Image (tube, rainbow, N blue to C red; front, side, top):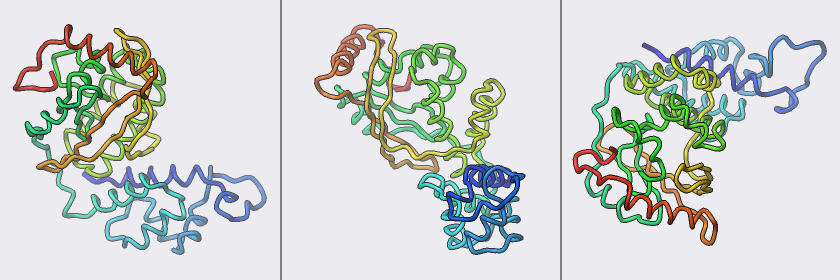
Length: 294
């Protein structure tokens, strides 16, 4: 198994979105046969030969120096997340990193759950790169209660967004939320392209959701830091929340993410978040000690 198709499609889609005018090159006369830049134009911008760049875009990235990758990233005007993704693809293409593997599910240490439980005015949870919820506090579970309605399998944000019909009502900006989720999964796939568990999820969603397939093919990537998100909760109504995400150290190859949602003080969303906390105290079952996500 290799990642040459991911490399090829990523570079081709980044090249297609740029025009000669955007990078300071003459547009030239006549009709262009390709959308965006030509390969030879990217090669000029990166300071490499056309033959070399063509080979790179065909997926032959193993052994390419960091300096050359930086030059290509600048030529294609990659943002931070895209640059990291390109370097991840190069690292994963090295022979020593090509062995497929299935990760043992990481267990969140009890002290992490204690930390989450201490956050009573914010919704907080820990997820892995596959978007599985590994640990969550009471308000977080209340916020995402529609996602936890199916107790047959662990909660997964991507699976809920694309396979549960109710998700499009729960997320008022469903398109935006779906774009972010797929971009996060794509970035994780670049970091660890031979992760069987992640590939299995991508295969499942690609088979069952046309919306997911279209977004996955776009090769957009994202690094999760901070932002705003809207919810239409079935118990308390609309919520406009802000979030911050932080990396959390793990004991294996999974990259864990701690996300905290809060409401702006003095707003209707703050009142509704407090109402949701009260609702959770009386309507949600106690969390089993053996499985904090159920």
